[in-house]
Length: 449
Image 1 (cartoon, rainbow, N blue to C red):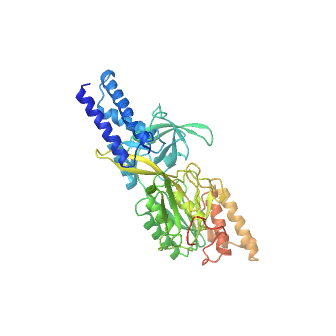
Image 2: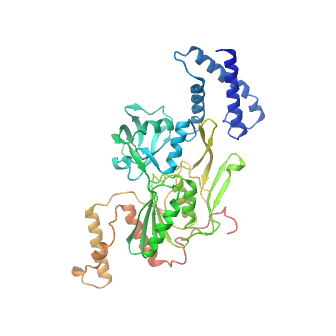
Image 3: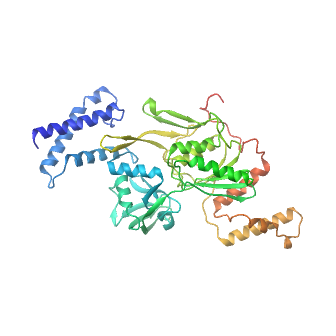
């Protein structure tokens, strides 16, 4: 390599690293101490030596941009599974995700324990319809191991032109099975608020599939519509909700809390990463009885909503433990169209619980089981007999409960069934104006309460 080129590369590396440092984004090896800063030049000299050697002796010509991009990807991936350097193409793909429409499989993935892992399939997408489940381990894509793939590289391989197919091999930890799937890519349009309906007398149900622009406004519209139909209690389904836009998760939580309640806090290494997010005085449903359904596919924003509702005693959580994705990723755009996605803090619930890699334990653990028609019929028959007995009616000729059941959609699984049964009791034995479902102490770190 020419001496002039070496100086140019060294200057480029120095500029890049110092620009990161002065923005508060220094890599771990830079540290915050002056003695560490004195080592920067030695590290840069080593870096420059390696680039020089590669460009001189590698069997194929490699550009300086390719080498530097590769070094940055390695640097960020060495920190944790969520931090990454995104080239311009990957950064653009990430931006498309939050706008709610993209081509692919409809699957949220992460790297967990160094293995490509399904957070959740998005409802109604090819991945969901094929039967992929939260925590499935993607071992191969098109017959090739995913072991050395970064998250962004895996996303690129899974996405493609709508109508094309991709083969994946997964290990399902729940059953220790190896399964093969061939999925057809499709244009994914996510509807974040779905299935708003009355499940039983005065019991409403709304499913949030993801937090996107206007999710909270769409939820408010659905809530108002159900209240006009006589809803007194809500089952809010956050199962298989991987998160999304956190501002919308905060707004959703805000609908159910009173004013000035801590929703979530973040804690990082520097002062501006330590933040508290509190509710406004615009809660539209502060006394509505709420039951929240969660499972291992509930992550990030959905865990924040569930944690705040649980800590403030605003509702009861039913289901299974959530995913445990409770770290804050900040995105820093760079001049060439690339960006850094860097873990800068962790989330804590109002009572100070960490979500990350732990998750939220529901108040009532109910394993998921789909209800078949026989079980539904048996349950309806039992309820019919109980109601007839309580009303001192002729059991053989009482069809009141059967007629009522025909008004409402059938219950689909054991978790929804348990939530409906519990909500019936809450509505009967609690006054709507109290807004209190359980008597737990309020979070200790909330001031002025």
